[in-house]
Amino acid sequence: MGNKNQKKEGKFLTLFADLSILEDGRPLKLFIMSTLRNKVQLIGNVGQDPTITDLDKGKRVARFTMATNEHYKNSEGERVTNTEWHTVIGWGKLADIIEGFVTKGKEVAIEGKLTSRSYEDKEGNKKYVTEVVASEILLLGGGDNHTTE
Image 1 (cartoon, helix red, strand yellow):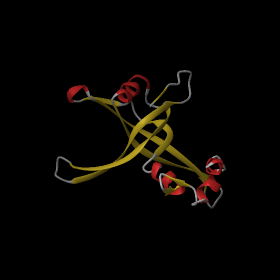
Image 2: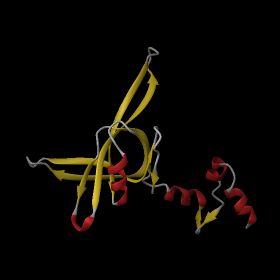
Image 3: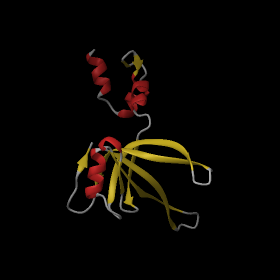
């Protein structure tokens, strides 16, 4: 039993490769991977001030876009920036925090999960949307940093 705990505290790659360690009757590698499903972490800048919607029974939802940047050098050695835009959703108390502290241009770190949905627009065309439903947000930069879960 003590040997099992020692292996768990080892380096991640060693732990990851060792299928002899069992957790809840499953190899530890599979246990770890099942807990990492649908987890998104992003650091970027807010694209516009959040929109807050008050729903039935006091529920609130905040929605904003954020940009993440990837930098690389092309074949000519020039630095290139690739910007991806993400729609972020926050529910309940997280929506309240987003409303109070998140503004256009603010650098934020978010953690959450990807969700996909479809809807029909006014012309009857089917649209597909992928969004990040945030479970945590960390305000970066500046003097007023706040975090929540």
